[in-house]
Amino acid sequence: MTESIRIDGLHKSFGDLEVLKGIDLVVDTHEVVCLIGASGSGKSTLLRCINLLEPIDAGHIAIDGIEITGRGVDVDAVRRRIGIVFQAFNLFPHMTVLRNVALSPEKVQKLSRRVADDGARELLSRFGLGDKADDYPDRLSGGQQQRVAIVRALAMKPDILLLDEVTSALDPVLVAEVLDAIRELAEQGMTMVIATHEMGFAKDVANDVAFLHEGRILEEGPPSTIFSEPTNPETRIFLDRIIAAGRM
Amino acid sequence: MAAGGGPSPDVYFPRGGPGDPKLPPTGDRRSKIFGGGDPSARNVWVAVASTLLFFGIIAILIVRSPGWPEVKQQFFNAQEFKESFPLILRKFVRNIFIFCIAEVLVLTFALVLAVLRSLPGPVFTPLRILSAAYTDLFRGLPTILVILLLGYGMPALNLQGVPDSDFLWAIVALTLVYSAYVAEVYRAGIQSVHPSQSAAARSLGLTRLQSMRYVVLPQAIRRVIPPLLNDFIGLQKDSALVYVLGVVESLSQATIIQSGDFNFTPLIALSLIYVVITIPQARFVDRMIARDQRRRQAGGDL
Image (cartoon, rainbow over all chains, first blue to last red):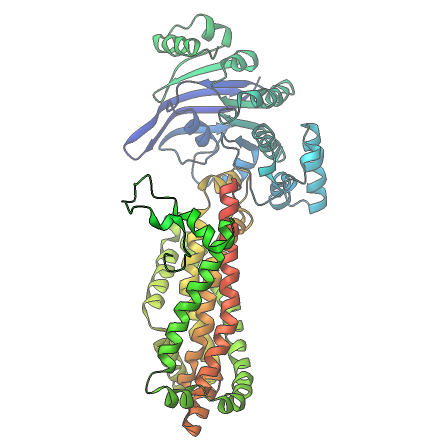
């Protein structure tokens, strides 16, 4: 397996608040890594740093062996290869579902509008959203909106997909449809980094689970190890809480 | 309401405080007076009556004032109105021309100013400063001063290629001043679009400008249309200010007639024209604001 993402000594502060305190993480191609940990542990910030949505303070991030955090990097080109899906969907409310998906293929990849729309329609149908193409996002359920957001990210044919607590804003009954879509992507070999509170899903889909606590990765390993025999006491406390909350 | 009531047993109830349980609800009594149980119909009647009464009293006071015959002759002269109105209306076409051109220019120029001011990052600091200084300056200057300075100053420079049409400089002056206001309106709209929208656009590989153009601005502009139209109503009224340059438009036409005939009715005629064109726009803005509010309450974001 080849390395897709390599992160070395990543530090990130917002003002006086140091959110990431030296993150090292390697994600192989076709691998799914789940980031778990309490809210505020730095999962979202880590994902936003990988996508260069946040400038980093120290450390290195390399994609396919090429550093993206140095000077003179074409930020837009990096972002084209890395898709991200947000907790709050962030669909564009003034565009139809179809235009949401087709916008960046048309404007960034310079496809003709017809080709971009055709591609978007096909992708939407593949995720069971074919009949929603001409609706505006606010007519859709939360689960449908989040699936559209996933399709929108996939429309750029990214090598890597980052998912930032994509089910946290959803009704429990709508979570499954989104998780199924992600599971399908995992089976197709998409390289993914997933920040999630859905432990059952992480157990199921992840090759590797990393536990973040106060800006550090305290423990990392295959889900079977992390979930059944965690070595770090903080991991144990976190998982006990999750179990107590009935989330696992 | 006691004055309007016929003999009714209610009247003989002892008068208590507002909380007196024996005092019948006033609504019941009023509905008896008007003979109907529908409260909205009753409200309409009350509104009509009080409005008529209010304005009737004012009208009577004005008409019965000692100077009224004189004022009527000077300001509300039917003959004068009939003669001056068509002339003024014809010149008002020039005002329409002035503010229509200015509005198109303002829409574009103000957008550039607002976008410049909204550019993030340290590289764009000089552009942001420039845009902010511009808005500060032209919001601080009285419109009439800008019109005078440009209208007299620019032609006086005698520069090669600089036209000396005061008509043109009047339009430029209005554009400069109103762009400052409208730029602020645009900027408020841009800032009202949540940053997560441009984050989503950037994450899809769109450049800063593309994300502004396709994602932020369409949402921002939709939100600021009502305040934008408000500023345009102001601009339309201020098109009268260009008369200080001697541009023959409706106001200078009206004052010419006024000083020739020693009668102020032409000014009333022009006031009427302005009111007639601005009121529909004001109502339109009100309706748009109300529509926006309904949508927001319904949960939609647009």
